[in-house]
Length: 174
Image: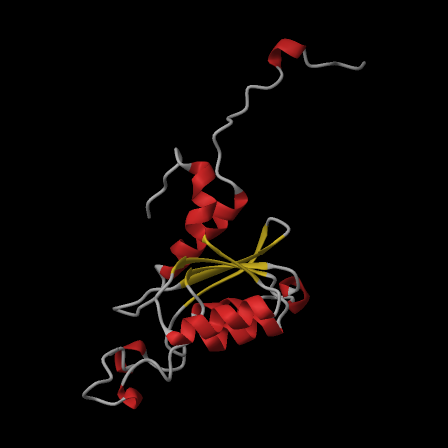
């Protein structure tokens, strides 16, 4: 016996939903909350075909006790070797290295809460990631170089606030 749903019961779904791009950016933001860095928490989320394939956050190397890690970020008086900069693992590297199948990175999108540094930009290009969506941008020569590298290598670069224009009524603060 074949049954049909009456037409008066069809439809009625919620119209005001988040686009998958905004969800991925929010997941990157949530991932950043795992960081123990006292000054800069960065998160990353990699998606392909609307599916999350990996996430990451900035952190100390896991075999280096975070209580013994030099979390300082002021290099002026103590020297760079006594700061986090030469040692910290960036969110992009963390997300790329956690991907269970590296072929998933090809033609994927990485959502990151802070614009990628030049080293992470090189990784993004090398693994075939085709789009970078970022939250915060800090003016610097290094970031100008990162942007140039990404764009010259055919990687689309978008700031996340451009995504949010279509979702003005939906605000999720974490």
